[in-house]
Image (cartoon, rainbow, N blue to C red):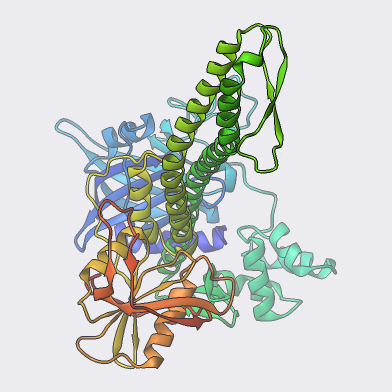
Length: 556
């Protein structure tokens, strides 16, 4: 992302136009490397996000939710002490550097002073420092005197900006022209390595605009004179960058660079949050599945041990019938099997240290234990297999999820199973809408998770059509009939959607069952998403996502 001085100049201008005159109403530090400021302006509240991590440092306007930690970090408390209700006087980018500072008018009951908050947007060296009269009051990332560093950053020392890089100023066209003439290699790499305030992505755009050999005047014009055309660049249908101006074919224009940056990072943040949440849920669920598989394996092993139960019983009976022929100290007994029509014999192993009677009791006790084990394990095995199938169903929904909202209720589901611990939320978010489609005038709805599947199925009218894949875990899909006969074309579309949102998505010719809602029942105390159904027909369908429509609510 082009967080060079060239781009930051437009960001600073955008922040200045929106925030000057506003007052700080709230300050939050959601994480170690980020700060959020709620700023009240005449146009309402604006949320300024300062991300100072190594990966994507930036200052941007955001509309997303910000979770405040239970205890505010020290730097956040310092900012609240000095900047709460402070008025923004100016927003400046000094000396065409990757720095933006805010000047504040801070007023208390007894004093009135001016303070300056620096944001250095410099990759892994990104930082924020609050200063008064040129002296650092506090910094987000401090250094110690013992550290070997060129800059000392802690309270009480004078603020010194980072040392300027030994690069050519784009305004010095004479020096830049001489350097360009003497260099015959890759001009993109030359511009990014030798011209102040330009990163590689910006150098690429300069060459795209002016060709392989741009002049010094063209470089200066691109940076300072050419009109901005802020845009978000797309690749494969997804945002991949934002630019002040670009020659890229697939792009979406925005009124200013700040808006383009906010739109891009909204997508990046949403994608990152979705990936992180899905990874966390999948990891916890996979651990639970491994435990379930281990438990099932142990149960099946115990049942295997019980296969010889009847033979143990037989040996006990034969030993009882032939106890007169056994002497203490015998190691085995060859007894005629009177259940065998052919008159075969059975070898009965004996414990030399036990009496014949005790050996007989040993076989009966072992048989009784195996019988109890079998009865107990068979009942537990059935429940364990149902639970394992339920976990597989949840896993299918996690794999098919497309947004964070798709995972919210699944997270609740895993928390209810005590697979994960979920922090208490101050406000429960509204349930996300069903996936919704329109086909030939019929509305098709699909659940995003087991809880939604239950709610969707329960909300249907008796004559609405209900669909589910056969032998695969899938979303519950419904066609809202409203008393009409559902044509085959609509059923085909609904079946393709059902096949797509199943764990058979990677295949073809997926069997999809469909029936009227009145034939679908949920057993008492069944897991979320589990139903039984009758009077159904089956259609072979190829998975197809189809195009959703926007819905205001999830009511069918």
